[in-house]
Length: 263
Image (cartoon, rainbow, N blue to C red; front, side):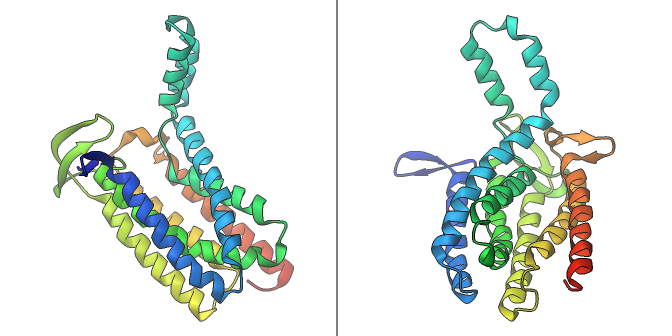
């Protein structure tokens, strides 16, 4: 596609620029939302920053797990490398990719660990993030389209261009599944924003988001064409995580309703 853009003679990664715009837009949306629920914007930002560390670690860790066979092979072939630096560089390359689900749950875990001391605002903070996560994710998927990653299956009416797995351009037309997901994420963002503003699902928006995205992602995975994301049996890694998400969130809702007689 178009992984780089030239600005004042500098070749900059378009994915990074789009992600930066996504961060700024998400922060701009989060500010009025935090005021609406009475949570200091500082708490939102510090939670986001600490959660960002979890996103970084979780996304790379899950990607490394999808490359477990290659990593094991690298360790078993340690003696074939000329130096320790070359060995470490190979390991870094094998874990250089990012998987959204790993980042999502890593971010949620680290964010919770940071904010858990302020128990009175955990629920409204979760509601705010439930709204802005799909918004930021939509920008990320647009970035994926231009970078050539997370590409779709071959499609007669798709787009041809750079594919990240090979690092070169191809003439095969592919379904722009990244853009389709971006549009659906914006729809999900709009729905969650409406629910947030109407205060009809206070404290439940994160559950709604997780369930909705899990279903969306499970379906879209059938239209992905990049085998590098990993498969087990007849489903991709993300599809198994989507199923686990639906089961886990459903059990949480049932337990919560049983204990509090409400949801």
